[in-house]
Length: 303
Image 1: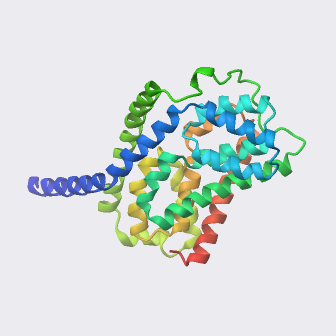
Image 2: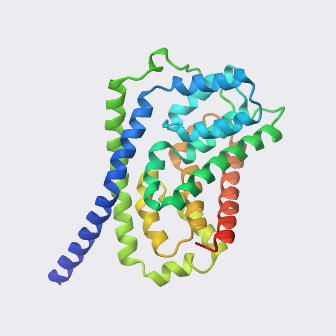
Image 3: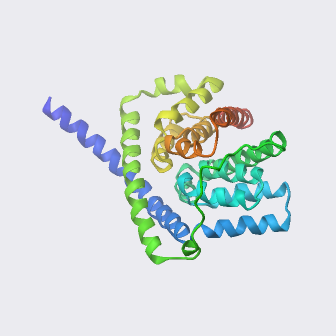
């Protein structure tokens, strides 16, 4: 019995270290990129938005706002006060919707991690997050043309002048925070991956995801709610699931619903959205995840 347990432990540890060594270089590079962009200061995005507003880009500003959302390394709790300032200074709320939506789904650090999923999945993830942001902006633009979708009245903070340039001190602080937070979640994600790989049989997994594409997308979206604690922590899980038969459409559904329903993101959004609009927000993400996942499976043949 002792030898059996010892052998099981050796197997689990071997697979754990194998996954960790595979992910480690991407993790380090992603943390460095995210920390550097954070140290540039939130005011950079503030200035860019105001510049676009002055240039009168109209609906095209939604496209740029969605791209800036992906480029933003800030968490929702860091983004919301800045967006409140921009809204008070006259920024269009459809641009804000596009920025917030894509920012929730993807950031530079997570984009680096996603390279581990392969070039095709990396591109699809980027495109899906970008389009989700653009569509959210268009929905707010045309459905809330004369109404307010956001409510920033409870926020009085302004962007501090002292955070408008690069700071080595902020870089080190951000680096330490990123290593501490993402490192823990990465270890949890690898441990869960080892558990799934060892104790969930291949035929059981394929019965859920491999042969029922529409049901598989719903299952993937549902798994995103409890398992998406940190984007980096889900990378090893997705690597294993894709190898075992999960389609790209199902993976995308997981990657969209997960961050959208993440507790910290919902907590931040509750400060700027009434309950009715929180419901609309959730319905939108679930609908987009299922639709985009279904379309991907249809055209890629469940790849």
